Length: 411
Image (tube, rainbow, N blue to C red; front, top):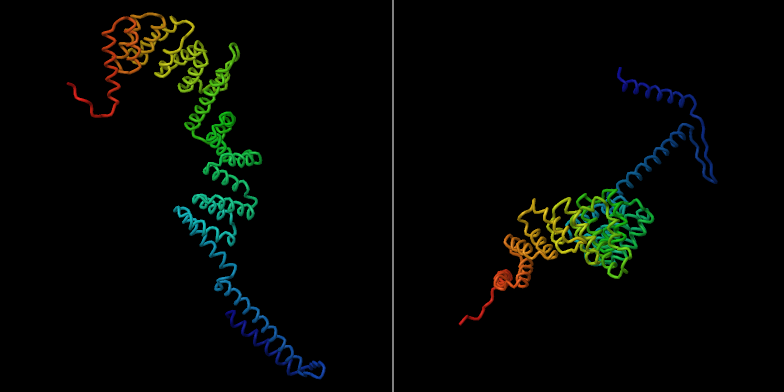
């Protein structure tokens, strides 16, 4: 037998029992209030109360249904406002991605008060205002972002620093990032931004202090990190060279002190060695510069370092010439090395050897500087014809760089 049949039988049984109970004793119920009285049986009264309860339950269900429907249909309901705000935010972000800054700013700001997380709206709207040059409006939007989401103070401050750097407001950006670094010293992106800011400000001393931390956290590729370190220490060496101009004889050379701060792996870098040697030479420490260049060239041959080696005055000119001549074994036709050997021969007053080296250099590469050295030597050797010949060749080199212009005819 199915359950439905059993349920019907149970209902019929209960109805029969109730009917027998009503027929046997209907009971009596009197309700009196002031001059009004109602008389009925107990069973009718119970039925009335049951009907009243069912009516109230039905009315409550209808009210809930109407409220639910109104939330879906009513355009001003909270649910619909949030849904529309989400749609407007999506449109605003699309406009932002496409570079339509005015539309993006308008849509994102309009939707911000009605979305659950308004921070994204305000930050993107601030960037859109910045792109339009509306800097005050951009700052106001960042302020609203902080008022609505104070826990996101780091994200807001970093965004503000980025915008300030982009505007060229470097001192304001420095103040913003200094505050972030003080309160959140482990924030890596703030650290990277601080490094970029010091680079823009050319504050090499402070940037040097950040270099170990930048390297430790791998915030740049290895190539970028090395280039940054070269730039920092190169600039520090130049600054030290400027300070060295006013140093008293016998006092510590600031150039050497700065070089000692250069990391060991960079001390063989040709660009930094070149800068170091040039600053030593400018400061009058040419013998020290010769030693630095000799050691560097002993590790790896480099044209620029060879060129400077031919210019500096070492403590032992004969030894300096012999050192450079040993490099000829590996570079017999290198014009830069031959020019340096010519100059070192001149320093040793070896006129014939100097002429041979200079002529060999000039034959391998027609260079105006080599030409000038050779002409000067030939004139002092009273080789006027040879000097004039080389001079005309050198003049021809300069003429090649002149623009084509009309010239008077020869008569």
